[in-house]
Image 1 (cartoon, rainbow, N blue to C red):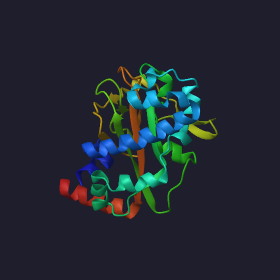
Image 2 (cartoon, rainbow, N blue to C red; image 1 turned 90 degrees about the vertical axis):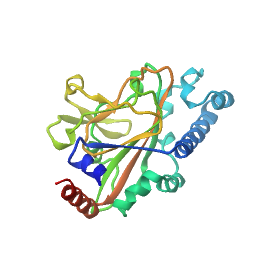
Image 3 (spheres, helix red, strand yellow; image 1 turned 90 degrees about the horizontal axis):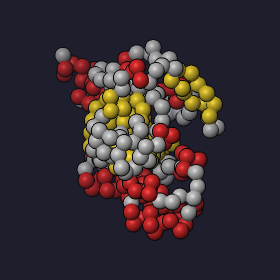
Image 4 (tube, rainbow, N blue to C red; image 1 turned 45 degrees about the vertical axis):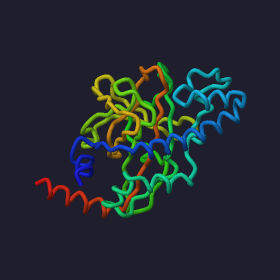
Length: 252
């Protein structure tokens, strides 16, 4: 129950990890979809891309615009991938505490961040803001939290940055703009003044975090691509409330 207390009453996030076999499976699912995308846009590069690996994507002479081609629809894994994630150890441990937990398919999405490319990273935000803007819906009586998984990472050089305890306040100024066919939140605070913390995550390590926690990417300072995948977990709100009450009682 400690992970639930950390997410809700603590710093806003808790750390977990995939097993080596689970990490290999996730890498395989992402790589398959990545190669399928290249077969569509640059079939002549597929063999080379498969040989060098996804973390070396930036070394390929891609004949298309990276940002526009790798839009969200090409990076959301198929619904058939959900059972594989829900069978993994980390998810079984979640369901031990939250039996109704399920993966929200539309957010089962991987990202690739090339070395030294600021345009590849997202701005600081809270996921709650996207839901507030009408991007997605979960059943009535349910809540959600987010999971970020490092698939190929270099600790200290790339990964996920967070603002600990930011989920405890609604003071963070932001507005919404219509971009790429949907309303998206834009932070009105100085990202530099927030003193974000870059979590030193190895490949296979993951972050469970609160829906209102401020987080964002960082410019990749490694020599290889950073690849990650995100999951939104929905669960019955009453289960979450009971679990938090039990966690608080245990910690008291």
